Length: 129
Picture 1 (cartoon, rainbow, N blue to C red):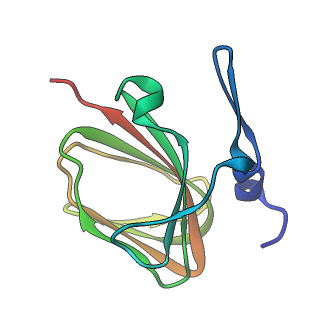
Picture 2: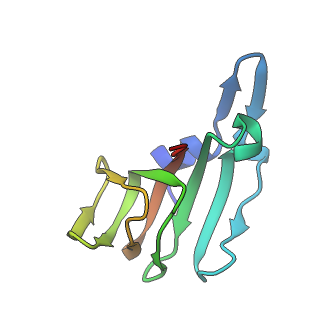
């Protein structure tokens, strides 16, 4: 992978008040359910009292995050590199750099990477009502 925006994020830093974190030292973890999908947990629910989590997501070419939903959070996808589609109940969202998608609580969705792979910054905001 050439020096690109996603690489800058995965080697960047996080500032949360007085707390500083070197994102480069955070490991990539294979997704527990979806082969070819890897997560770097930048901000976890433990960091925010369960209110917010943020993850870099790397999806190999042709791989996918299968159909699922989040019953307790709203999800925000920011496409950083690559291409693909997000399939929702309302139709397909074409994913390319610069695309931002908001996925409502309980909205079923599937994310499929294109031939280049797909690189996302995914954020989950807890819904407390």
